[in-house]
Image (cartoon, rainbow, N blue to C red; front, side, top):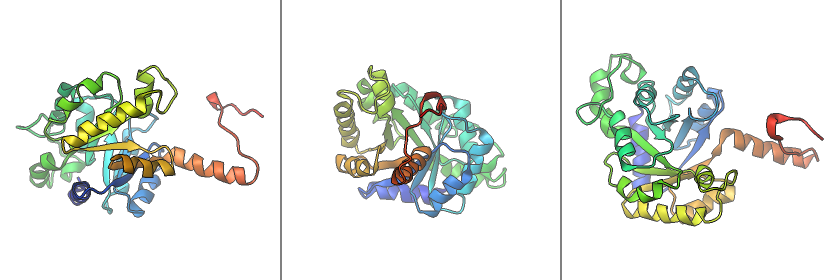
Length: 267
């Protein structure tokens, strides 16, 4: 656990400034290493979608060890074993998808904390220096760990105000695409009415003194989200940023085209 990076992350947010990061889905730890070298405030290693396995996840975590970047792991589900494993490998926190209720959020926090505040087991793994710094790590882990829920269903809005009262949660992330799909607008980033609803939920979270995060859809959207009051801002997903650059380069030589469903190659 990178306590100095976590401290800086929190101080930046407390000062009303944004923390900028990258969503990582590709296998190569060089992606995270580049993000750290560029001084990004955070990265999220995505273990919900895609195909990253645990050996690849720990390689990404190791790529950040010499930097001051917070590294979080987005899990596939709210599961005690998954939370424990990600934190044992040295993640600074976890991102929990599809959080809909206050009770789910309280369980997520409990899974991420050692007793008596929670129910996280202690292991002689990377987080504890393979057991050699167990006392030091366990003394600071509960106060340092980040638990970030993603609000991405139409059920969640009724619970958001209660969620903001949960101790141990400082940032709420929003998932516009899944929220839109859940609202009946599958395949749209922000379907009809979704943008307005998410901005209203953002105001509820901010009124509680906590912070909101979201992935930006483009470079101009980063500035737009900042003006709206979002403070944990994702500059993009690694694969999407690569594609954005490739499209621009291909367009410059008259060769640009869209990827087809099923990855078919068609003229």
